Image (cartoon, rainbow over all chains, first blue to last red; front, side, top):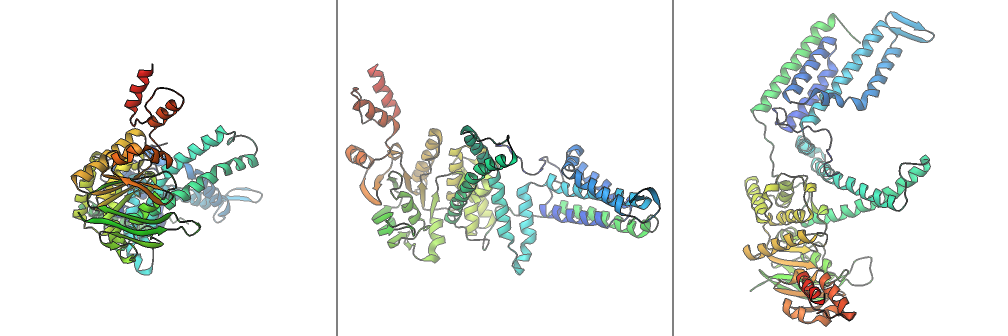
Length: 273
Length: 276
């Protein structure tokens, strides 16, 4: 229980891992945008190649990267079916009653599925190469300019980091309460659904009470350590953009340019959707 | 020597309770002193700790820390930066997911510049002998190590006073020893005033002064020798005597020939060996 890993961070040393988290967040957003605006299979192919390249540089086994698809495999499949059955333009390839599958329907379904897969895998690159803490730090600093319009960047980041800090503690506690309740005859994994839900209540209530108790103590401790919001706070770790980040932006720029060119030229030949 | 903490006629009552938790406490703590506050649960010792660090404001009377009155809200941050507090539960006082960032939390709040911040964090970790864990996750540390990190988090604010609010009560004997040794060392080497709150009598043996609290009042005060000499009073206050003492007392009560006033497990062992 103590070694619970959060998210899917894959801790190795690589040029991608050592990039500034802000760079990685911005580049991931750009990647997602450009996967979206690619209009051709060739464009998606370029995106796929690019993602593979980054994955290779980041030294993440492809197997791990593809694992993140498992969770949403159903959604991909569902989108595929929807596009297949409900896109009725083009020449019919198969017709039976109300079901009509067209050639452009098939192309579109495949295209959408690939696009979704690339989106997930592309976003996965960020979480594989950036620890949750770095991610929180990066997000806080990216959103800092929005403080002007009242966006609580510091507060959100503080909540995220406290949540990260307490997840292992609460999961350990859940385990403890579960054992304590089992010892007194509670059954969590058998019986009818209503019975199981009732058993869960016996788990959730002590957990909730304890979480509130912890929150109160933590608030006291934070106040005792002079916490008074983000105002006038300095940071031990200061994020710094280096030449590496510039290089990453340059590579991304080239990639974006290729996609744009591809959209302008190739899309006239193989227009999809 | 000058008084670093001055408590005058301070009382405290929680809003939803009818009785005062603290009743007209008078207490002065000298700079560099190691003061132990001893008392059983509910005697008001934790409330006293919170008064010193400005987490609670006395309902009547006054608390002055480093010549600053805790009733003045503007002084709360400077007061808390001078009087750091370590709490009971090691898990519920750590904010960051990395040890060194947790140590930096206090000085970050004070707005210490980055270069100095780094220096302070490293020094604080050295002071509690935890430098090698700087980049670990807190949940991989033992209870005693976590409390030492909490102490480092206080040291990094460069305080004049450390308040230990039953900081060892959730630790195993080894962790308790580690933490106690650490605060004693900081008291001697850095001259930091320590207010050490506990219900374990054996932890107070090396203090400069002990106050014993009961029912929101100071019932006894003196050096450890003076306090321990008065066994009757201690028993009367229903203090948590060391387990060895408890066993010895029970044995003596039941007619065994055992000295009931022993404090250390080693002494108990000796007594028991004589019986056999």
